Image (cartoon, rainbow, N blue to C red; front, side):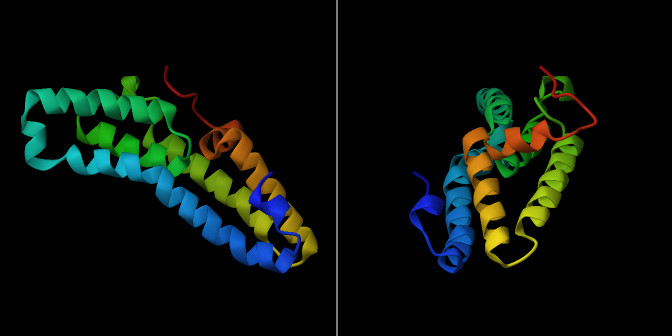
Length: 147
């Protein structure tokens, strides 16, 4: 059962979803942001840390569940010198996926009536099942992810 199923009132659901989505995004990104902070500056002058940061950035990018996490990991991978062909996604592909997902979200969230709330609920449920990044990447794209 999702939060959307537990809240019968469309108006309450409309107020609750943005907060739920924001809180979920903040929790999911905490690990990659910690990695982002560790893998910078003086720490990267140590060959062992640089190598670990490269491995971790490749892993996080390849296993990201949402676009923001993938974008942060991709910037980190560039920063620590991971070759483009070893990155699961490039910046352009992720930016295009973010744009497509935003367009899809705009269509779902366009109006503030009961039908719009139902679209928001469906959009959120689909994103929860498949994951935001997988959902966005399933939309038409110009480049396949590197493997």
